[in-house]
Length: 528
Image (cartoon, rainbow, N blue to C red; front, side, top):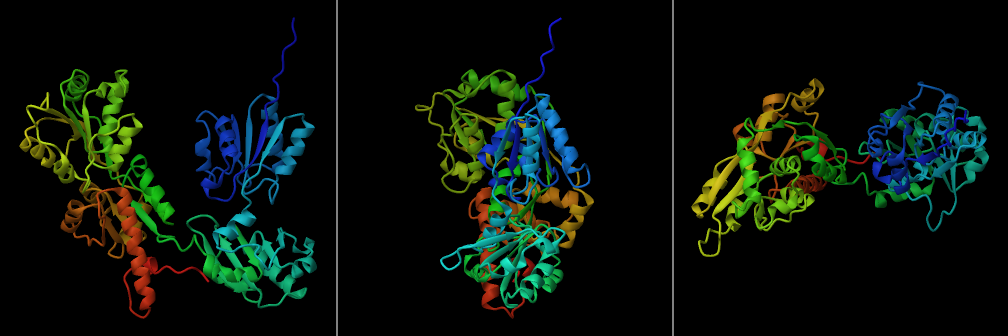
């Protein structure tokens, strides 16, 4: 009997995840996550990073109390010895304030190959997000201190003379750290910054002194994780703060769209510093009868149409799904001219391999599309028919306009829109009580459906709409419109809200005594 071949140990990757900003994960870290069979991480805190992981990979939650560090190390080594590729994710850098070294030693003892991927250290990243340089022309030395449960283990006499001191776990440790620094000769009026939830849109920073920092932390109700910086470099925050001064920083913005639809819009809001909350108001379902769509798709590759007009990303998706079901690809559109109502619809077509021939040069709407759409010419146009796949509740504006231009339109229901289920009670309460700073409406149907499933937003909530028709619907339902996008695109809508917030803040700062609506949102100040 031949001997049973044992698995060759697979590698263990010890990966630094950086701070809580998913975009700061290194490219190598993302590659290893995508290839992993087993990933150990704090799943509730690192959910965005776990999007890199294959659906069939095993996730081990390392949240406190589930298992000891020693038990986890043994488990990961065992998985690696069984031939499974393991990734262990650590906050920040695995060799700075984390237990990565212990795992590497265990792998070496077990003859398991190991790779260590540095991460952006939290100790340096969070001060950067707070606008505080740890070194400058006058200060060339930084001391990082992790007091842990025993502050007496720190050499405070050395820390007291260091130009810049970074203190980890500052919410719990900074009081004793400040007292120890003063006791060893540091002046009580030395500037101190404390940043909680660094690199998140919930980040807050207070600026204090060693004498006052403990009481200021308590008054500000800061929680871990928090990083403190001690030294004159803190004074540069006033001029260098770049993150907490973004136009919508800290705003909680309701986006009444599905996660697929809201992706780009939510990302743009995050770039402005907002916290987007996506609430679907519309569910998309197939048409009751597939026959009209089937005939339309057959007509496309049979040469029945001169134009195909797409008025939404959902229409593109419905057609693409039919193509894939039938084994077709973008070549079926050969000889057909393509029109898209706006940027998002055009982007969806391009992703499928089709570049639109026509996108409105002006307003991205049915009216804007009609303004640029050519009339039918019986000499130049060999076919007079238009393929128009769209929602069952679409208005007749486009069909009427195309018909007036001499085209015959096959108006086909590509999908049905139905009202989504109501959001969670907590979200409904926040909508009605002013828990959201703003809500973005991207169509009339999102206005009607949000009010139908969750009620009207609180009067203090800023209402932003994508165009005049959406504004009219909001007004009919008793909502005051504060912001209207200059063009009918989600990018323009987010930018318009950001511009409005900046204008309101500037007006508030110019006349601080005058009361303004949404003082809590438009007049947000950095914690000082």
